[in-house]
Image 1: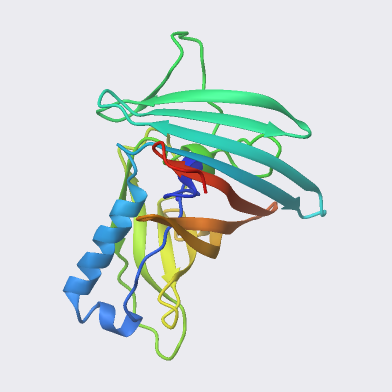
Image 2 (image 1 turned 180 degrees about the horizontal axis):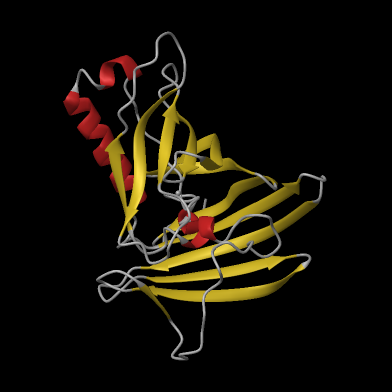
Length: 247
């Protein structure tokens, strides 16, 4: 869920909180499903909203290597194209800054007037972590589309995949086809989000640990991204929308 907005959207990124109906009732009540989809879409598509979020990214590799890096993400809404600024810092990571401008008709450009400015390769790791750049950049400029995911209903109290999330007008070419959302039918909260390719193979799993809110905004405060290389814990250190008070 571009994990540029991991607190309000995210992780990218990613990164969601909804009031879901029980799985066995979702398909019987189309109005409930439509309401859930609308709320999810509102949560995901954050263009036109200003925010400042500071995220701690803690990586632990398969060989127990440990690293911590911070991402400060800022979105300034503008009719001519939202401006996204990413600032990266860490004890063992040189400070870096990237500025992106979302183009009104899709795509992205650099805020700098230098034609030779390039963006990171999406498959490369985020500085100071094992997280792919894809999880940070892919949803930065684009529209998240939420749809019902048609599958056989489960019985009892088993988790159930009811929705899928995909990107339209994406500024960056991503390596997954869509994201499957799995909810617990008891808690009615999302359990995790699977990035899957067009063959149905799970590339990464985003496991929700904590959901929080700032005013009317809801989002994921803590999540673990499970990768073949290890695990990444992403935590919202502070969040501010507009000129409101930081939380």
